[in-house]
Amino acid sequence: MGLIICISFVGIYPIYILDEARNSEAAREMLASGNYIVPFFNGQLRTDKPPLHYFFMILGYKLFGVNAFGARFFSGVFGALTVLITYWNIKKWQNQTLAIIVSTVLLSSLFFVQEFHLAVPDPYLIFFITLSLFSFYGFYKTEKQSWLFPFYGAMALGVLTKGPIAIVLPGLIVPSFLLFKKDFNLKTILGLRPFFGLLLILLIAGPWYYLVHIHTEGIWTEGFFLDHNMSRFGSEKEGHGGLFVLTSLYVVLGLLPFSVFIIQGFYNAWKVRRKNDFVLFSLIVSTITMLFFSVSSTKLPNYPMPSYPFVAILIGFYLYKAFLIGKKTRFITASLIFLIVVGVILPIGGWIGLTVEKQLQLFRPVSLFLLLATLSAIVGFYFYQKGRFKHTFLSISCGWILMAFSLFGVIYPTLTQLSPVSLALLKIPADSKIIAFKRFDSAFPINFRRTFPVYDTVQQIEVYLQKYPRAYIITNTRNEKDLEALEGFHLVLEQKAVFENHVTRVYTK
Image (cartoon, rainbow, N blue to C red; front, top):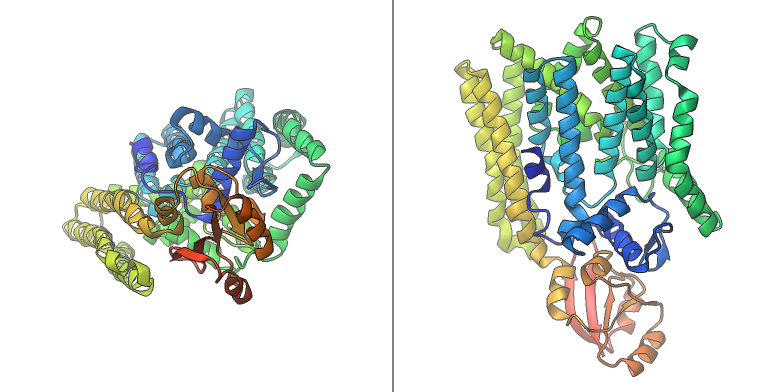
């Protein structure tokens, strides 16, 4: 079921989001060139990310073709694996009922599931950090050395996925847990075999980092570690900053609908922390991860997602106790009423959003699918009032899972029909010569399965057109002088990006 939810409809709408476009195209260029060491986007060095997710996308391309399904397939697989290992560990250390509750909380969390529908590195990182942390807990409880292989091995693969963060988070969480348990001493630390762990990480992740450093004469290393790691943490990047509390709000948004119980989940976990090591560990993972990304200057919704399985455990444990007691409380009542409010706001917000985006006004009726959140919250509240807690939980979770299916199966495919790249694919014949002027929508290379020469002057374009008079020129420059310079060409297409602030224009001679 988890796999079905995580890969549902991933191939029926095009890649159009910037991060997806650049990651999936970098993988395509690796496959096309046979160079599996140095990543490029449109022929230019890409220093944003290490390569592991590129490798899985390449495997997806080989299995399913160079398309959206191939790029996104293994993101969905790793989403299902994340839920699976969460279920397995909860069942092992707690009980099966709690495991089912937490798994359902995760699979009904719309924005969490959406992350596994994207061709980006985060699904892989979420899985590897989750696996690493659960493996540490297994070692702590059993003292079996076999747990150390997935503990450090998952860290190493996380380093190959997104860099040092795969070591930093466990490196903060593990000592914090040991301190809470009053077990932070030399014997315990040496028992974790840190030198073995460092060696394993170097053996798994080190070779590629060394090779890319040599092949790019240190340029990739400098760009990745200084710009995309230290600079992102220490200063706001690309306008993605915000208040300290923003990260916590991202977590609440990402785990809806059951994040309406997040305060009770944290409070309950704090109360039982001395009686239940598993809940204590989940509490520490959740808190440390959220604090870390709250302190970071750059804030994005996907950053704190490695905490989601553990926050879901806190929420699930609270709901599990509530189901056992079977007693209505004012806190549960307040949370369910708030969920109804959220359910009312969602379709209204969707309708308004599609009204503001003028080119999408005809598609406003698709926002009515968001009424599933409204209906499920109302039905859930009805069952709660009748004292039928299980039916409350099932009503809400099923409603949000169905809304996810409608989002991926109807809303996205409908709205992306009017994305610039979708319309350009209809306007530009497949075998046409295409060049770019100044800048262009990042979704074009992966959807056209080619790189584009980029020219900075109209004179260069005119020279190119003398040789290829039927070529197409694409641009999304915002510079008025540049647009005036292009007025001598024939405008074939002019389309604003969906929910973004740039316009793609396509010209011919």
